Image (cartoon, rainbow, N blue to C red; front, side):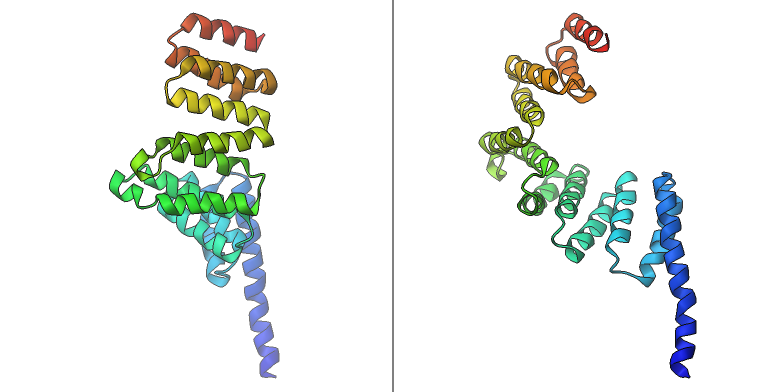
Length: 228
């Protein structure tokens, strides 16, 4: 009899929890993030180890640029599901964004965790393109004394080229642009645009003409050609 009573008591809770999660998902997909957050947080109290709920809350925190919270949620997701590459990538990304907000000394203390997260994402998914982009940027931005390395950035760029020719040329262009080798960057961005013909490849080359080469005429002509 006691077991029967317990079942009847638990059923409404389970139904409410499921309903709370489903409503949260609908709100999230409708980009009503604050309303979704309230429901997901309530659901998480009943199921603290639910991977998807932690992921949604991490995404909402990232949308709000609350990088500490985002990192906490993504850290939980990677611990709950350590075979999912994206969770390690998102955790590393949240740490990287947080590092941009704090003083350099504290930020440098987070570098190893970022590296490990992105490298783990690649080991779990050898075709993970965003994690390689993140490592390229990390090795470009870091001072040499703390592990910054053009050669390592180039190494990941070469890996990108094997996975996606467009990303390969874009990343080579990014490295050249960072080191102010603008003529070489232009060549790589042109090749990327010839293959990709996308808004992203256009924007990279257009910005180079306009902001780095200081050639508004070339930028304008390129834009007209792209939009034709």
